[in-house]
Image (cartoon, rainbow, N blue to C red; front, side, top):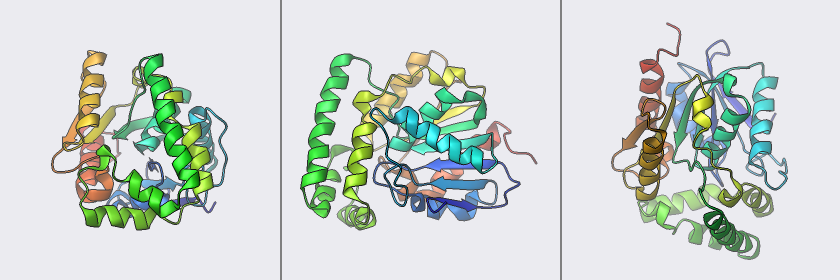
Length: 266
């Protein structure tokens, strides 16, 4: 399948990595030399992204999770380690909900477990509808310029921002629009308790400069009243997109987490 790349010995434990909104499977490329020594890495374009033209229904987070599960199972892997960044992290939580026994470990990067109140959900839907309209009606590069001016990307230098814009510019705006509306945070159920279903360890990794998601992760961990259920790692000197800005550090955090739980055979 053109929207899946694989790296490393197929007999190694499988590691599935899910990118964020407007990303692509290639976003994980810098991590592959190190991770593929320890895992059989499976990177997938999410629906509406890159070369994956699968169109989600609305709401579509559970459908996106089932889509990823089917593709991984079809490759012959019934169990795997799972990493999800931002939108990919929210889809990863739905994978955990659908098939908890499939996960050997779960690493969430800058991922929102869901909104708590109906008012918050309606507010977010209105917010996302405004962005969706811009996505359809503005020249795509102009949309990207606006997108990466959001507060969550405030840590980016102008050079990093332009690099991301060029990297994202080849996506199809119509396909992105369909995915964006189907996977709005306003449509997502609260997934905070999902990790209690897992027999596998779970961690959330956030950037110190990403104040919103650092606060959200600390709050989530506190609400669980059991810090061992959700390990929290805060990476200094970076914001929302850790694996892109500090790929080697992200690799080290992931490998340390897996090793600490003795999840890889000697």
